[in-house]
Image 1 (cartoon, one colour):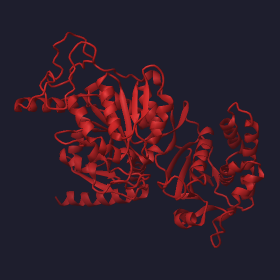
Image 2: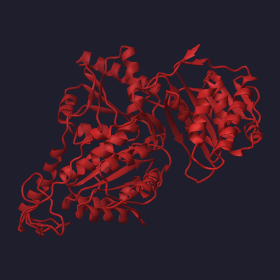
Image 3: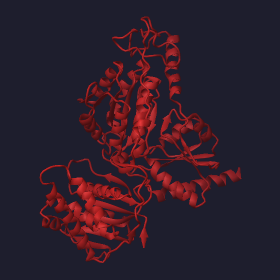
Length: 571
């Protein structure tokens, strides 16, 4: 039997190498030419607590972590008890026999992980023992594993050779030990190496790289899960003349630091999660009324309050689009893949400069921690527009008109007044009704400068459409492909531009009898926003802290489509 992909779940306690093993397997596979995608979920404590990570390896491009588990690697009894039902009947369960014994499950095989690792002289090689065992189950050649280890640990340091030797010995030990079980999943089909060079990235890393490619100059952030790794990356890499990265004492300080940087003419960004974003509300209102460019990345997690700090959700959309008091509606870009994390960050910075105001880039925990191979972006093709700066004489009325006006930079021509009170076209405070009408209309009219006609659609003219947003894109697209194979009459739409929506997309959606929106929240937030714009939208909601399963979406969309078609026939 030949497999085109297989799914492995590693489950145990934080600190047992659960995440390291999954990412190591994914990196091994992509180096050999396969596609790989991981999903990680863990508790909020620093060490311990139930943790599991899933790795999917495939000959084909991957969209989701996979529904069914081919192999469960259980590091303790609780992990086995919790996850055994997700393993398909002909799957395999590898359990750490140094930790517990498993009886009565014919799918199980004990692997003395720590003993085998110690025998190599490298106690830290336990994850390599497991990777070797998994490679045997799908007949992955040993040279793939050895090439991965050699490349990973050749760092020009004393002792590299010894580390490489011990890790290869651990791979071999895992492979040979599980061979005694007779368990076999079949041959993994040969890799079809993607065209061009690939990068193995997490979503948060892709956001960092995209923002740097866009010319980011200032980053101020406070550590908060699951956005902290963006701060850490910037502290290491946003360096050099004219660059500044800094850890602040609160999210209030981060948004005010960005206001100062934007006021001074710099491209500025921060990243946070829901609780931190709430603290930025007043600062975002000031950025909106004073027309100061900046970008806030919201890495969504379960809420409200502390909620589920290390689980995934899509429940911040209303808060991000309408964060401040008064008439405010933030431009929103919501990325759905690791590759979109890169290009979405570029676009967010470009938008902030293009319309001179705040932009929110929305992502989520499942993307932040996802490891996936993507095509290496061609930086020579990235065109980023700078800020439109005033270069004329003094006496300039920056806030005149209803579209963009060049922005004066302090110290250069043109008086600059960044006023948080309502103001006239000079920036001087005024309470006149006519001025408030003028400035409110100006601020909202500028959003039209961000309208783009960049969206995905199929060639179907079906009356019912399926349109996810954000990180639900992958499972939804995989479900859509199955729906089409099943003959379910449904069209596909997607965009990462939620405000403003591409005008042509909005017009097409308004013509549909039903737009089905899968989203990870209770209220159906994006479906509600679409209804407010004249779209007949209904949500498929889930709020478990986990991504959608493809089979669940196929079932729900099929049911909703059949129900609506019956209503249309009756009408």
